[in-house]
Length: 338
Image 1 (cartoon, rainbow, N blue to C red):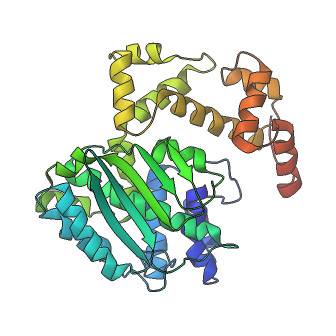
Image 2: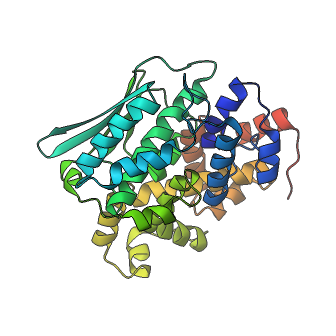
């Protein structure tokens, strides 16, 4: 829901009520523990752009006019390698998105994609908009790069130029589990330099199909490009309250633990990160929507004892499960069910 809040911040800055859009999508922004299906998120993405006539969600000093994403794709399509494609993207985005500067640096076998403010974006009290602006542009460039070369491109680590946001645990599934947070003005995503030499594999026919549902469709690439992450998450969830280990999951996927580790690493995640993110999501949902005892929630999530769940939950939220539940009741009234 943190990504949804950020995507709506431009509308709120302009005093445009997003309620009609959210109601039509059955999204309750007040329910921070809920998850939005990726296809619904993509649809909301496009609806906001249509409402604002701005593919930059109203977050920047000038609007990013509809059609910009298509021409970004076309600018990269004929490039021989990803390095050439990213250079074309850099030049095109400098025209339609002058508030940001993009650069790619290569140092021997390491490379980094840097996104830097050319003018300060709005900070507190609207830090959500600035956070989302960086999240969105990294995801846009990274996802499009993955699609153009026809494979997932692992990010080794990312330095984000803002304090850790409440939804940062989801970064392990969207970007990489190796995320750092600073108070600077530049984002740096680090990856293997050999990826820059990959050829652009998509053609005009593929682009025509890809542009159906664009630009919101870019957010759906992670479901395909992160296929192993999705399969592991589903296996762990369906096995609960049994707590599957990495070897058991690998066996069910008909691969060795080493191969599973490598594939998850290629998709920018790890077995531990997936398991922890899933438990966190389910714990927050249970505490928000039910009156189930804490011990039962812990047991259903596969924790051997309640104290281990308490430690994990405090690490996720900075408060105990009871305090989290009391805080929700105070803010929204007690509407939970058994």
